[in-house]
Length: 312
Image (cartoon, rainbow, N blue to C red; front, side, top):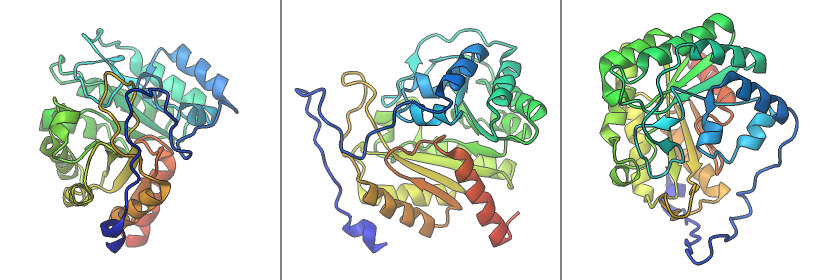
């Protein structure tokens, strides 16, 4: 696509001497409103962590004001240390066997029509948490039969038996993020592997061909235009249906990978158009797009496109 080849990237250099430097004007978020307080109460009573809080998501105010929350199961301590993520790395707590029921009750109370469930990596567990994840999906389906569930797990080291367990629980969408381009992956997420993430997505389609698959990539880490194109092509070659493209924002100045570029909304539009031209059923591309941001609408778009194309 000519637009991406000629695209000029907006570069706002990192300045360690000015930690309170202004963000671009388009990187501003609204104050809490609407049902924000209700969501806070429901989440607190559930006792289930949310990635919104643990990962310091910039969309928390907007989403919680609409009663949208992305729950993070299996605790709030991760066995991996990714250099873009604010979730704490530490020895995890024991698995709470009643978490699936508490989670399902919170989803019902918030009246969610679509819910994203993610989890910390649990490399300490024999099945890496796949069985517990599956029980959470099934509990939501039982308690909220009209709610669609999007599962967003770690890579399970691409172990087929773990992926099968989660697929057997029949989430409507299986999401696993590639996060960044292959060259930067060892630096950004040293305990994961770019090709392993692609293998996860390939295996999901092999195990459950009709399941919708989704992945996401962050921009601003130093990737090139050719690398971005290559990553999108890799995802399509492995059957990914839905794509999210968002701006990386540095959680802390000293402990996380720095931002190399801020992309403008117009540049995100160009990249979104490129992704659609490659055949993704649904694409969300913008500075504040995250895996779970407006995830229900993104999923619905993929279903409409499937129906129009006559795909199963």
